[in-house]
Amino acid sequence: MQPGLNQRPDLGGRSILELLSNQSCCYNGDLSEDLPIAKSTLSQHLKELKAAGLIQGQIEGPRVKYCISKENWEEARLRFKDILEFHFFIYLLFVVLRMTN
Image 1 (cartoon, one colour):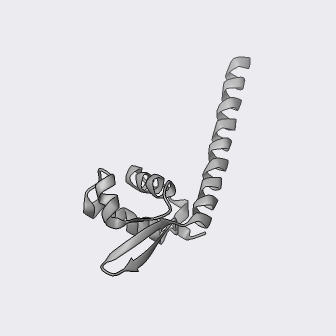
Image 2: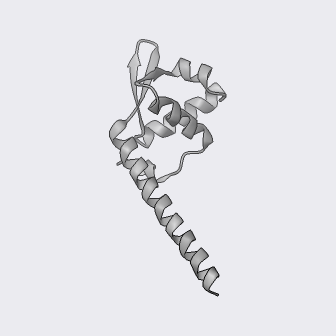
Image 3: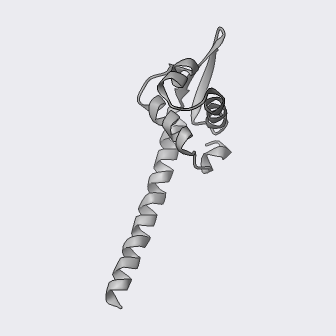
């Protein structure tokens, strides 16, 4: 997994990941039409997600086609799942301890 995967993407990055994970691939131009994100902001998010290894880009003529990186996406999803389960466990432990006091 790429080093950037330890960073949490913000809402714009998550919106891009959501859109791409529900499709096989889409073009950069399509993304700007489907997401309420300025083109410059979208470009920055795509650059960061690509650097993190969560998406892949292929240059086709004057356009770039972006796809979810299935292997890295699955690894990140599993890592976040583990983190969420751990936090939920801590929360439950806190609730039980409060109830016993």
